[in-house]
Length: 186
Image (cartoon, rainbow, N blue to C red; front, side):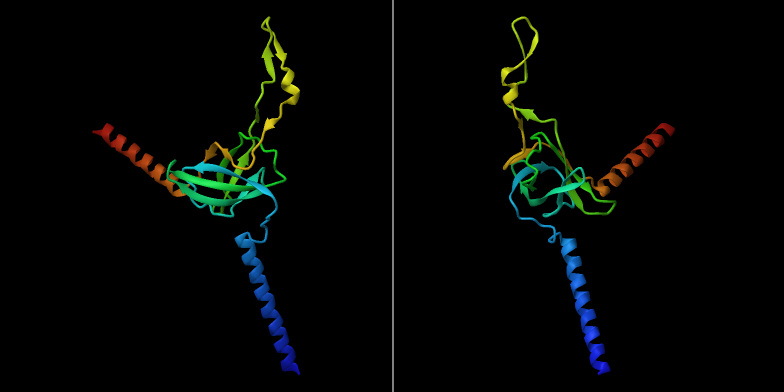
């Protein structure tokens, strides 16, 4: 009877370990936080997306508002086109928002951070009257800011920061300064 109880405990321990590994795999792969509710897709073009992956987070003010849906190379622009799926509840993002690729921690995963822009609209709020005085346009009350929507493109982007490139630039600059010092000694 004692052997049977020990076997049951070992079985439960192994099952618990497998469940813990499964939960860890779901957390690492970001499958556990995936939402498929209604959202909208926006695109941005980057020269260098080193380390960014499909399903990477899209954040604003540190809050995840979407995921990277697709990454493809655009041969016409010679850059990477990143399609982001923004959750539907965040439908008031200004159309002149910017996108930057950041790293979570020193060696963490890459994600896209959005910064809201000032917003633009299709109508002017201020105009000049006949005497040159500034007056409020009659349409100003009807003006609504333009927001990102399905198919919008984020124009202002900042590429991924690659540590190897920075080190290479530092070494290159350091070596060129040493060469200048040698030339002045001669």
